[in-house]
Amino acid sequence: MNSFNDILAAPTIFRDRNVLSPHYLPETLPHREKEIERIMKAVSPALKGEKTRNLLIYGKTGTGKTCSVKYVMERLAEAGSEAKVKIAFINCRIYNSRYRILQKVVQDFLPQHDKAGCGLAFLYERILDWIEEDGKCFLFVLDEMDMVKDLDDLTYTLTRSNDEIKKGGVGLVGISNKLSFKDRLDPRTRSSLFETEMVFSPYTSYQLKEILKHRVSKGFAEGSVDEAAINLAAAIAAQDNGDARYALKLLQKAGELADEQKAKVLLDTHVEDARKNVDEDVSYEAISTLPRHQQIVLCAIASLQLEGSRYSRLGDNGDSGDNGLLSGEVYDKYLQAARRFRTEGRSARWYREYLQDLEMLGLITMVESGRGQRGHTRFIKLAYSPQKIMKLIETNILGEGTGAVA
Ligand SMILES: Nc1ncnc2c1ncn2[C@@H]1O[C@H](COP(=O)(O)OP(=O)(O)OP(=O)(O)O)[C@@H](O)[C@H]1O
Ligand SMILES: [Mg+2]
Image 1 (cartoon, rainbow, N blue to C red):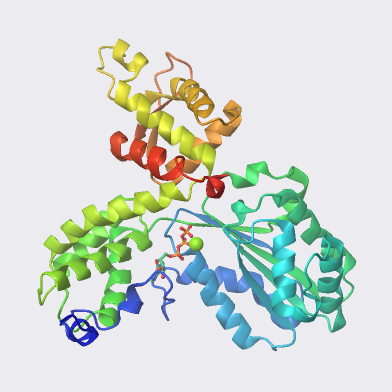
Image 2: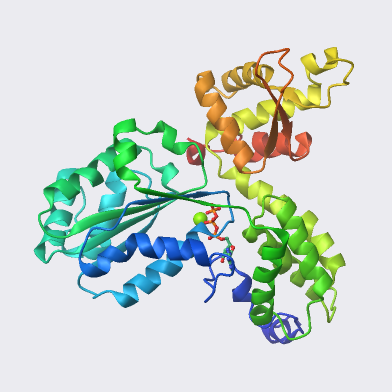
């Protein structure tokens, strides 16, 4: 008979599975000491009751932006007087407009004013009164800030609030993995908004190895992970954008595979197998949360790649054309595909931005033509098999209720 006891009693090489989960915040963050120091410097004025320096943090996915900022905010909350330093850590993927962000702050800090249907002005006034009451320093931490739909309005509101407050101040820490999102902002607010900018660079294989070693010592039973397995996971993730999240996921999956095979030691072969598994998960996750237009662009790339590029078949200086697809032909195909999905195609300017998003997520790669014959163009390649991507987008995503990908 099946029993939970049997399942719980099954031997496992994990000591604490939680340590490998994406939500776990480690006590130390190796190789982010300098970045952490800079964030601390930027927000330290709050401890003296002064407005903090606005900070914008960029970097590719999995480079430790969220966890570094969380780490600093925990220290800041400990160091500051509870009444005076207030921090709102907001995930803009969920709270994705000025209204929803202010509403969330009222919900968390001023629940007595949280009533259905409050206007924006009401929320804004309540927050300002509360800050001024005793000269608080309020810190908005906006993670995945690029997801905010009315970012210009939000930045305007936050900048203006500091002019209106007589006592205390409002500071902002913005985090984003879209390097280009700032270009969308009104240039006037841009400079005042981000007084300090930081870039988190991808981790090297060596750095990932150390990060993994820390986790292994807590998450796995002693002696149950072979050094070669750690090295391989670090090397794979370093090649793939230096993404620590990916490295951890590889190791977690490899551990599960080892458990399934009742192995006592996690080996590099488990990591090798895990890679195939994780790649599927990661790409599925990345694609299914993409906004609609990015999905359509991706679909256009996949279908062109399946048909074979018209231009590349012409050959390029005898080159057989496996450079990839030309940016222009993909744009034409995108417009076609948009019609098919009953969506209005956007301008080429937007299209270029979508390409950047897709590249950032590791779904495509782009190379500049560099030869000058066709002006300045780019070659685009899909990082996954076009069949798989087409199927995913057509059946799973655009096929069913598409509310989530508006
Ligand atoms: N220096 C580090 N030491 C230990 N763990 C780390 C380090 N950097 C990142 N991690 C871990 O890697 C994972 C990804 O980190 P994090 O969420 O901070 O990335 P991110 O830069 O915010 O990525 P995204 O842009 O996708 O949001 C987390 O599980 C985090 O704990
Ligand atoms: Mg993050």
